[in-house]
Image: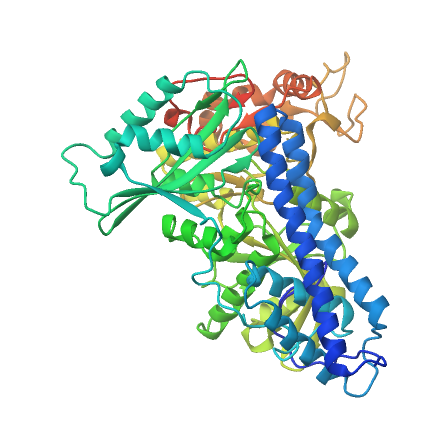
Length: 612
C-alpha cells in the first residue's frame, strides 16, 4: 500500500525477502545487536526532538522569534537524518547487503522480536516502531513488507504509559480556591520572565472562566483542573493546554501566553469553544514544539479534548509527523476494508500540473504530477516537488493545507474507475504501474479534501459569497504577512473548509513574496491600438501586476462587488510593496491562531489578527 517517499515508513505490503550477510557471531547475538543499534538511533532522534522543545521555551522567554521559527523548520528534517545514520551504521557494522544470504529472513524476524523486547518499558514505543520500519526500508531491498519483518500492526500498547512525574498535573479548586489554583498552574509552568501585570491577567482569566460557567455551577467532589506539564510553543506564543473536570463532564481549554509591547509576559485569552480549538490545532498551521516524555499520554489527553481529531492528526500537530503518517495509513487501510466505492477523478476544473483523484467516501484527495506539464506553467516535476517541500517547512498560518508525500502506493485495481485509469495512463504514464491486482503509483501527494472555491461560489447565496470573498482576501494577506505569494490566484486553487475558511492548496507557482516585483501597468504610448495583442511594456519573470487580478478573477459582478468592499487594496501594487518592506525590515508578524475577539482586550506589535 503506502510507503514514505523519503524513508518508506510503516506500510503493510506483500511478503518480501530480507537479506543480511551473516557474520561470525551466532544469529541470536547478531539479531540482538542490530536491534540495540536500531533503538540507539531512535533514542538519539527523540533526545534531539525533546531538546528542540526545550530550546523553544528558552527562545520564547528571550523573545527570539526567529530562532523559534528556525528550530521548528529544522526539526522537520531531523527524523530522516537519524534514519539514514542508523541505516548506514547497521549496514557498516553488520555488513548488511540486502537480498543475499541463506536464513536472512529468519535473522530479520529475530531482530524484530528482540526489538519488541527492548520496547517493553520504553516511553515512546509507537514512535520507536515507526523508526524501526523506516530504517528497515533503507536496508531491505524491496518496497513491500510483511508484519513478520516490520511493524505493520503495533506490537506494544501505549495505554496507561505515563511519565514520572505525570504528563499532566491536577489542581483542586474546591480545596484551595479557583484563584489559588490558577496561580499554581502558572507558577508550575516555570517561566522565568516576569509578567507585566499578573493580577490583572488573573482577574481577566477568572472572569472568562466564570462567564463560561455561570452561577449556579454545581461542583462535584471530583472537580479539578488538569493541565499538561509542558506548554505548547509556536511562533510568538506559548499555549497552556488543560481541561476542567466536573463529575462526568470535561471542558477543554487553552490559555495563550504572549509578550507585551515591553517584552513582559501576559495571559492573552481563554479558548474553550470547539471551533477555537479546531483552528488552533489545525494541520494547516506549523507544528507545535512541546516537550513530551510520553507522547501517547499527550495524544490521549488531546483526543479527550477534541474527539473529532484523529490520533494521526494530533501526532502530526505535535511534530511527530512520521508517527502521524503511520496512523494515517492504518486509518486509510481500515477505510478501504470497510468501503466499496471506487477512486474517481476529482470533481472540478482539471489542473495543468497535477492530476487529482479521490475516493468519495474518504475525505482526502490524491495528487499526481503530470509527465507533460503545460508550457504556460514554465515548470517541471523537480521544481514542483521543491515548491511542496517549501510549504512543508514554512509556517502555513492556517491558510495552506498540510501535505502527505508518498511513493510506491499500491491501490487495489478493482477500486479504480476505468476513467481514472485512462486519465493516469494518459497524463502520467511514468508514475503508474500495474502489478497483479494492484495499481502502483510511484509518487503522489495526499491532502484533505475541500470544496473548491469556484464551485462554492457557484452555489453561494449573497451572505456566503461575501464571507467567501472576505476569507479569500484574508488568506492572501495572511500568507503575504509570512512572505508567501500564492502565484496562481484562481479560485479553483483555493478550497473552503467545513468551518468556512478559505485555504490555498495548489503550490506549483508559490513563491516568496520578497522575490516578486509588484508593478503598476504603465500608460500606453500615444496612438497605441487597444485591440492589438502586443504588450507595450517589458515584463520580467517575477513581475506581478495586481491590476490584472480583477480581469481574470472578478468576472462575476456580484463576486467583484463583494471583493471590492473587503479587499480593494489588493488590486494595486502599493499594498504588496508595503508588505514587502515590512518583511525586509526584519520585523516578524505573527498571524494569530485564534480570533481577535477572543483576546483579553490587548493589541500588540507584530501581530496580525486571524479574523474569521
